[in-house]
Image (cartoon, rainbow, N blue to C red; front, side):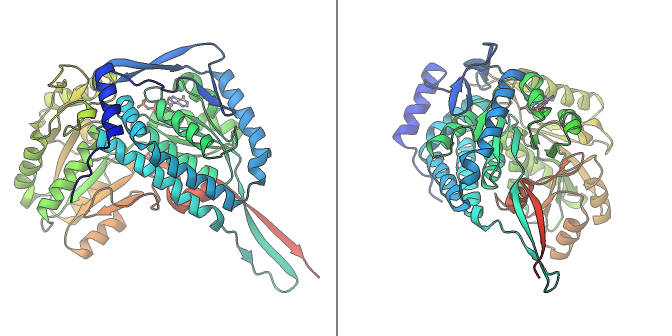
Length: 503
Ligand code: ADP
C-alpha cells in the first residue's frame, strides 16, 4: 500500500509546531452562543505537550457560571431555529461539518498531536474518523423513523422520535476529537442541542470542532463548549437541571460521581468507562497476523484506550513463541514526540506516568516477569517528555492487581490457558466487560467465545475491527448504553407514542 506524501500545508504546521513549541491562532476561550467567551471568573489554565512536558497553550478555566450560561443558551436554541430545521436540512449541515473537518484536517491533526501526545498518524486517523462520523449521522438524520402500531381499524397509533433535549458530553483526554464527534454528531442528528466539556488536558480540538459546526451553518447556541477542570466545569454540567442526557467517557470513579450527580434530576446517561480487555489467542491462529493485532491493541495511543487489549490470553502450546514474537516487536518500537511519528508516543501527563510506573513496579516486586520494557523513559532525541517503554508482564496470578486494574498505559499482561473453558473463565475474570479479541481459524471456537465472553463487542481476527456504524460500549463496570451506530442516535431520542380513536 502506498503512503500518501504529506501536504505542504501539513509540513508547514509541523515545522511551526516543532520550531516554536506551539501554533498560532489556537482557540483559548469557551464557545457559547457562537461566540468565544472568557470565563466569568477570568480564570485560565494551561495545556501541556506530553512529548516535551511543556505547556504550549492557555485556555479558559470554566466554572458553574459559565456552565449555566452555556446550558441556558442551549435550552433557548432547542426552542429556536434548530427545532424547526427539517431532518434533511440537519443532514446537510452535518455533511458540511464533515467536509470542513476534512478541509481543516492538517491543523486539527497537528493540534490533536500536540495536545494529546498521540502520534501524528493516529491523530490523522482520528480526524478522518471524526469526519466519517458526521457523515454517517448526516445520512441518518432523515431515516430516523418511528413506527406505527396495529391496534385495529378504529385506531391510529404511532411513535415519534423526539430529541431528548440538551445533551452534556464529558470528553476524555485520550481521544479528544473522536469522542467529541461520536457524541455530538448523533446528538445533533437527533435534533438535540449540546454542551460539551473536553478534558482539561486536551481542550483544543473540541473547541475547533464547535467552531467548524458554526461555519457549517449550525445555528449559534446549538453546540457549545465549556472548558475547565472536571471538578469545576464538569461537575457543574452533569448536575445542572437543564441537562436531559449525559454522555460520559472516563474512569469508573468519575463515572460513579457523574451517575450520582445525575440522579437528583433523573438525567438519563450513557457511561463509557474502563476496560481490561482480553485478547484470546488460540493455538491455530494466523500467528503473524495475531502478533501484529495484539501489538496494535495495546501499544496504539501508548495503551491509553479504554478498549485496549491489555490482557493477552494465549494457549499454553504457543505461549513461549507468541510472547517472544510480541516482545521482539515491542522492543523494536521507537519512542518519540508524536509529530515525528515514532513507533509509540508519550503518555498524557507526568501524574499518569507515575501511576503506570507504580503499577509495573508493584507487579515486579510481586514477582512478575518483565519480558520487555518496564520503565519510564524520555524522548531519545530531546531527553524530554513523559514516556513509558512498551511492556509485557508475564507470570501473574489472575487476581493480581496488574491483571485486574486498568493501567491505561502500554502494559500488556500475559495469561495462559489450557482449553476454551479456562480461556473463557480468564476472559470474564475481571470487573470490566468492554471489548474482547479472539484469534483463531476455528469458526466454532470463535463464535462460542463471542457468545460467552461478557463484553459490549467482540473482535474476531482483527482487533478494533468495525467503525462508526458498529455500536460501542460496555457491560458491568465498563458502563452501560452504547455510543456509535444507530443505537447512539436512538439514545439521543425519546419516544412519544400517540394513539388515536379515529371513528
Ligand atoms: P482521568 O482520571 O483519567 O482524568 P476522568 O474520568 O476523571 O479521567 O476524566 C474524564 C472526564 O471527566 C474529563 O473531561 C474530566 O474533566 C471529567 N470529570 C472529572 N471529574 C468530573 C466530575 N466530578 N464531574 C464531571 N466530569 C468530571
